Image: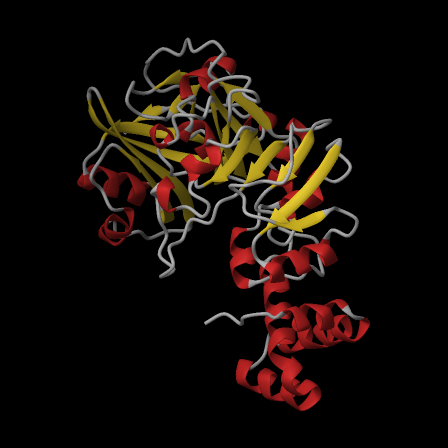
Length: 392
C-alpha cells in the first residue's frame, strides 16, 4: 500500500533538510529495499518512510515531471507528461484558465507563463500543499471541481478514473468528479481522460483529440464547443523531434490497392482518432484494405517506423516458416491485423534459426490472409533505399 503523506511530511520534504534527505536516499534505490529502509530509519527515524517514498516516486516519474517534485503515488500515476501538458497549454495561450483538479501541479507548471491568468484548485489538502512547493507563485485554493470559485475561465480537468476500491472505471459517472456533472458547469472546458473512452459517453465534447507521445497513446482530450476547432484530431508528439497533427477536416482520399514498396502502421493516435485515410492522403499512401489501418506506398513519411517489403504472398504457417528459414531469420517481430493469430504462440512454431532479423506483417485482406516479410526501418524516407518486392 502506498504511503499516505501528511501536511507535516510535505513541510519537512520542502525544507532544506528534507531535500537533502531525499537526495541521500537516491543511492539506496538500486540495492536491497529492506536494507534501504533500515538504513534510512537509522538516519531519519520517523521521517524515513516519506523520504523513501518521495525518492521512489521521483525516480518513477523522471522525464514526466520536473526533477525534485513532491508527489503522492496516485498523483505520480495520473500526472500528465510534460510534453502533453505543454501541448495543451499552447492551445490555451492567452486565456484565463482554472485547473480544477490541479493535484500536485503538472498542468499548472505548463500553463504558467502561457495563460493570461491562472488558478489551481483541488480538494486534497496534501496535494495542494505539494503544488504550492512545485509551482510557487500560482494562486491555489481548496475547492470542489463542480463548484469552481472562478468566473469566465476555461476549466482544465483530469478526473480520477478509479473507484474507491482502486479498480479502473470506464463509466464517466464514476469519475471523480463525474464527467457529465463537470460538463454541466457554465464554463468552456477541456478534460483529459483515458484514450480508450468511448466518445459517445461524452456527447458534450465538440472535439475529441487523441494524443500520443513517443509512439504511446497517452490520452483523449475532450474539448467543449467554445474551444473546439474540429471534430476529431490526432496529435503526435515526440521527444526526438517535431510532431504533427491530423484532423478530420483534411482530404481523406486514400484508395485501396496492392502493397507498394513500404508498409506503414500509423501512430496509435491517428488510428484511434479514425484519421488513417487523412494521414494516408497527406503522404500519398493507400490502404491495403478498407477495414485495416495499414497503409502502403512507394515512399514512407519522414520520422516514422516503416516496413520495407522484402517478400509477400498468401499466408499459411508452413509457407511463412519456409520463407524465414530460407532467409536465415533467427529473430522476428510479428504484427497482426484482422487475423486470429497470437504472435507469441506462432513464434516458437516457426522454428527460427539464423542470424538475420525480420518483421512479419500478417493481415486479412479482402482477397484473404496475406504475409509480408519486411525490414523495419526508422525514418525510412531519409534513407532513400530501394528494393524489389518479390512474391513468396
